[in-house]
Length: 277
Image 1 (cartoon, rainbow, N blue to C red):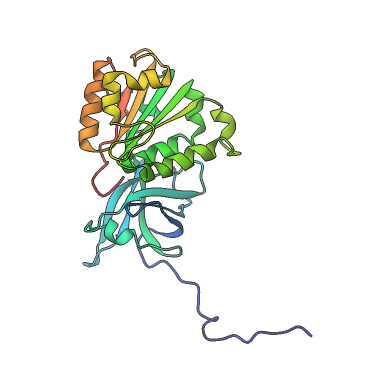
Image 2: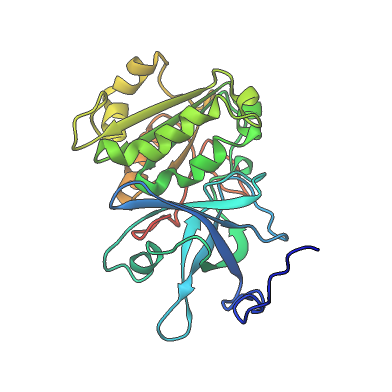
């Protein structure tokens, strides 16, 4: 005779159903610093996106209406889940609440991906530069795990500038894990170079990436020639100040800004805003 467990009132409760519109369930949360965290959520079966795109995610506001912000998808297009990387803003309408999510909680995710940081917006080239500050690394976290990136380019350089060393940890651990990744490692080989810099705390490479471009230090560090229209392509995601300065620098090298409908040599993500991309 087998043991039988009586059905209690708790055990008999039905499985919870989504209470938010376009609800997805949080599967993982990691706090990297007191200002930065990442999280993963379930992926809608119908969602198709290109690595580098963003979607609108959020929570229900106190007024009963969805409070949404644009967030780049940090996971690649082939991943079964969706990953996001966010800043914590103490008085931010969304991130002041989003930073407290836990596994099992639900968020709102509007499954309509868009964005300019996609391969389709660039003409063919040999070297691909990713320029990011802070959480602007998120779309590039997707693209460095995308096989097409290494099929299209001979060399990929991920430049990430933060204030402090701890803020680089997300990108550092991501890149270190790629070499042994069973799905993407064989595509990468020795093509990917990680170039982190800090602006406040001392680190091996100090200074804003824009300053290192203007001085030529970045090319000397990497043993590469200066950027040219013939060989180089670039993607930019950061603050408005970074975007503006890098546009000027890249166009000084002869590169032209591209778009999905008109591919060229570089693209900028204009949806990156204060609360996080």
